[in-house]
Amino acid sequence: MRSKILFTLSLSLIINHALAQTLEDESVAWLQDFIRIDTINPPGNESRAVDFYASIFEAEGIEYETAESAPGRGNIWARLSGGDEPGLILLQHTDVVPAEEEFWTIDPLSGDIRDGIILGRGTRDMKGLGILQLATFLSLHRSGVELNRDIIFMATADEEAGGYFGVGWLIENRPEIFAGAGILLNEGGGGSRSEEGDIVFGVEVTQKVPVWLRLNAIDTPGHGSSPRTTSSVTRIVQALNILLENPFPPRIIGPVAEYFSELSVDMDEEWGPSYADINAAIRDPAFVLKLHEERPGHNSLVRDTCSMTRLGGSTKINVIPPEAWAELDCRILPDKPSAVFIAELQAMIAGTGVEVETIMAFTPAISATSTRLFAAIASVTQELHPGSRVLPSVSTGFTDSHFTRDFGIVSYGFNPLITNDGEHTGVHGNDEQVPEMAFRRAVGDFYAVVRNVVID
Image (cartoon, rainbow, N blue to C red; front, top):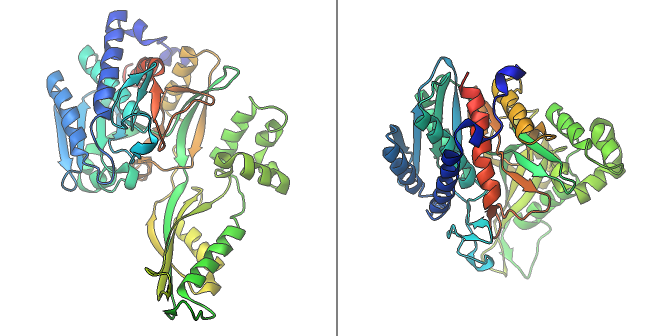
């Protein structure tokens, strides 16, 4: 396996240096142009991104197809035909989250380069990775090399709001696009460099399952000057207080245990032993509290969670409303059905008179790592970055990969871009950015990984 997979050192060794430089220059320009296209969701307007990609494909002589799931909610895909091996999908979403311009130092849609940094909404999530996919797709097309499988470029709408106008809609309405595909690369993973210079590439193989719930309470309304023993608002408050004071107990699933064990290799004595045997560590209340207080991201990997995000009641300060509500963004570990979790939560607040309404609940799925694609990610990144390590990871957020995993496609979240410890990224925040040189390096690294999979 090793001799078959390892035949790359860098993009400039696969294709000549001049072509590699040209592709990097093109990719930077594409990313700047892409950032300047307003696809903020809501409302999305992803058909603007479809036009962007369509113009590039037409210039390259690549056939493509498009479909709108609703007015302005565009999706585009193109295919390079190859052999009989299961096809590889390069999946991206073209929508981005809103940006509060007053908190940015530049126009969020500028795409400008300042002090070697490419700035703008989407540089990280996920227009930057989308352009890496485009660069690889076009490089393979331009080379005319024989492929061992089809490779499908797919840019879709609506991921930031659940994906129902994007991948979810395509699977339901255009399932033939996915026929013959067996593996997929999407967002969700990436490289990180510690202060000591150690590089770890996380490959997302599963994710916490989003379960969005609405708590509804109805009670007798009245005047604010005469409070009753219960009201719709106090019922909601009581239910939320129960959830706040009773966090879901920690538990460890296989991918999390493996992830923590790999992380322990580079940790000091304060954390290393506990991470090496996380199953034992979570039985220690002191460790669980410390994890929650000091490493909230990792704490979210060892338990189900619910964030209280929205509340509603009266429209007037002196009126006790007949109805009140709250919304919860719950994320559960992918080892049980969401229906079981919802039933457990309902039982916790049963005495409050609050009803639980399901807004959205996905299904759990885990992708196996015993594929040529995962082996290529591990082998190529270790060769391109000597001493680096690759480990399967679990995402606390969700991506469109849950749709494709449900469809039977092994899906990984992977981005070769390396982020330094403490580096500002601005993902879903202010001044979203990526260093130009790191992005340029990632252009070649992504190509090298994909090339190992699609060429024998």
